[in-house]
Image (cartoon, rainbow, N blue to C red; front, side):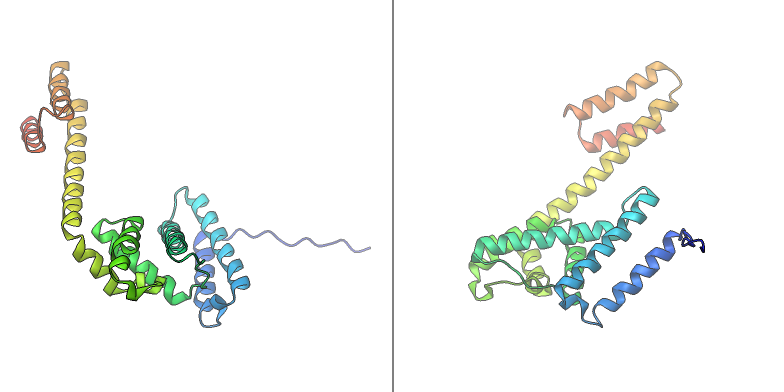
Length: 221
């Protein structure tokens, strides 16, 4: 009786697996797989499996994985708000083009420091209420340049303030990091206590960012 030959186990490098997945993705739209809901579902599962493998191997989430999560969140929020507005499920199967549009919209929102839930909240609760001619909405509309510009213009002051706050936050984090370096490299305990006193004064509200900057720069001397 012949012995059964077991297939060899081959360990593929991560870049080979990612390239394989990129080839599969490139074939989805040309072959119309994105329009076949049952089949496309398994393609998405395959993509998630590839993501999990790569993330586990690297020990951190990839940019593609983060984008996929952001995209799913955008779609889920849109569908929930669509159901609330229309009393109908949004059961349209998204095409590859619409997926790319979502990614482009997410990029535009990210550059302005805006979360997708904030954007969709304004669209459904403000813009569409004032402009019922666009109802019922669809995802392609939400990702269009026109809808995005309407949002950016109407919220330009709050977006500007948010961007300034983000710049200030980064500056404070940098100053605190520099203060910790001063503490570690201090020649004696008195010098350490002086730096700690400055940080404590800032955290308690007794000192502004500009004064904190001057103090740290002076100590760095």
